[in-house]
Image (spheres, rainbow, N blue to C red):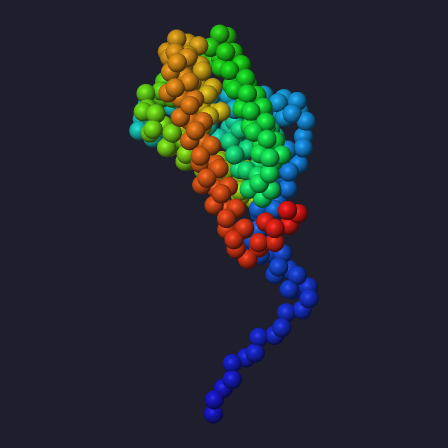
Length: 283
């Protein structure tokens, strides 16, 4: 005799609903969540965005401070960078959880909207958004760096650590700096791609991704500008070095990483996959 395998019972309606709820969201769902947020951002008044960008630049300064504090109180050992890099995450936590405007965030979301509509209005709106956010971020970082350089905010080892950390933003060849910045832009954009459905893991996602950026010393245009400008204000670098050794290659790399390696690729898997209705809707 042959025995028959027990037949699996059919799930009832509630069980099927629970199973669907526990599924990971598809790429199309994540795309739509980010795209709809970008659509609302492009409609916001530029003055409000500018103030938010200024706040983000100021908040990002605490990554520099936290790194310096850890650097100053940890012995000079081979594992010190592995600990001090956790300080790099502080500013990003403030900015992302506080919903402040960060330039590298805007190389993902608005680009998705531009790729969907491909019209002049979306392109001009994105360019305006980029300009306002970048200027606001830079103003915030410059103000924070000026305060650190001209007032006795930190003491002892931490103060000396500021100079040690800021010096690392210089001395890298242009092309190498730009390629390393591509990875920073890629990781930040990937972090934002994960955020809509990270839920209670949001803090963990931010810390892990930005910790890797800090540990690998991938240059970030906003976080790194605080240290780079601090070095200029303390006389350890010149404004020429700031713009051509740090700012230009880092900005180019961050934008390339955010736009090409995440926005375009993740858009393509939705636009040319089984969910092409999102791409074609409302065109």
